[in-house]
Amino acid sequence: MILKSRLKRQGHYPPIALIKEYAELPPIECYSGQLNQVIMNILANALDALEERDEQQSAAELKQNPSRIIIRTEKAGTDQVAIRFIDNGPGIPEMVQKRLFDPFFTTKAVGKGTGLGLSISYQIVTEKHQGQISCLSTLGEGTEFRIQIPLKQIPLS
Image (cartoon, rainbow, N blue to C red):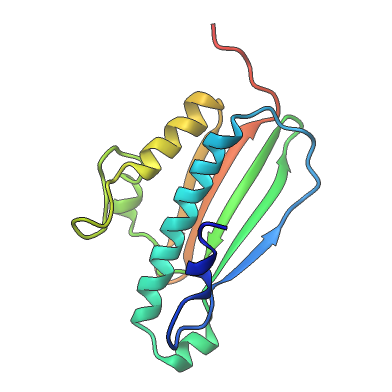
């Protein structure tokens, strides 16, 4: 809901397609509010990347390759679930990928980002949910963020 207006966009830019591919999943023990924060951070970053890419393209290029984000959920093994966010944006250079989850690291202009979104997301997924978060990206083709968390949380002692 919060990002819906950014999907519609203004001016001559076509809307960004949000494709939902949700699998049947068993109940998951999680901190839903915190996972929502992770999802918002990843989606907001994907929208930023797609908007930036689209500003560099002609109307014909946009028509041929419209911006899209796929959200896919799936069971990962017997005791985990995965949430994948796949965009067809500009991709992330390898040197940047290595620092994505570092606190205060940002590629955005001054005043546009704090460099905390993905760092906090990393902590929420790995520390609070005992899961993993990763990024796969190819320049010129797009980026995939993958979150994997266990179905049941193991109490930390």
